[in-house]
Amino acid sequence: MNRIKIEFAYDGEKFYGFQSLPDKRTVQNELEKALTKLLGEDIKIVASGRTDAGVSALKQVAHFDTNSSIIATNICFAVNKLLPKDIQVFSSKKVSDNFHARFSAKLKVYKYLVYNSVHLNPVYEKSMLQVSKKLDLEKMKIATRFLIGKHDFSAFASKDDERKNCIRDLKNIEIYENNGIFEFILTGNAFLYNMVRIIVGTLIDVGVGNIDPKKVDNILKSKERKFAGKLVSAHALTLVDVKY
Image (cartoon, rainbow, N blue to C red):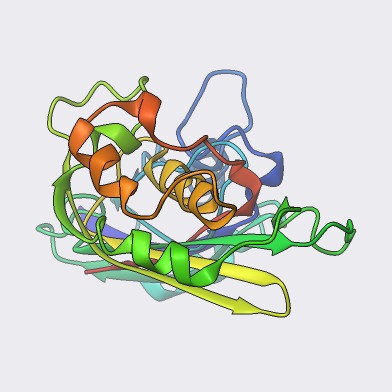
């Protein structure tokens, strides 16, 4: 039995998220279907984590076990011929049986894009969230200071997240602005359900003046979802990297 690690990218627009769902088009379903056809055996993959419907990935990582004798590095080229264009595998290699795509992951990096303008732009519509009110970059940067570190992020998790342990280590939040486009980059050891999108929604509320930057500390300590900002749209979120 060989354990294979694959790295792949996908455009999340037409998927019901990553995780396999019956009668739904998901990234996991499409990958397992293509790999099963290629290798001639039932393949089940384990990914570094799930992404919601509409979320894309520049680099997602998964592993699977196979009895096939196909050269591991050739799998990425062969399986791409069986995959739809909105999923492509760009790396495949044999790894140790101790490797686990989820539990071996040390860091995940997400990027969220915001177009800050009163004018619509059709080029940005599919990949960015439009915010018409002017965003204050410095205020948002002040707010990030309260979030970085190891905390209980219950206030920034969806109520649908049933995990009892909501402590996560948020290593960094970077915010860049260029010609009205804001880039939020969040790096952490792991994220709760909808955590990135709620944090960005809260920072946007800070940026437009709805929340005082220093109040973010109170929101975090409250552990109450109702005090944080809104859940922003998934279409502007991308999983950028998974580090091991």
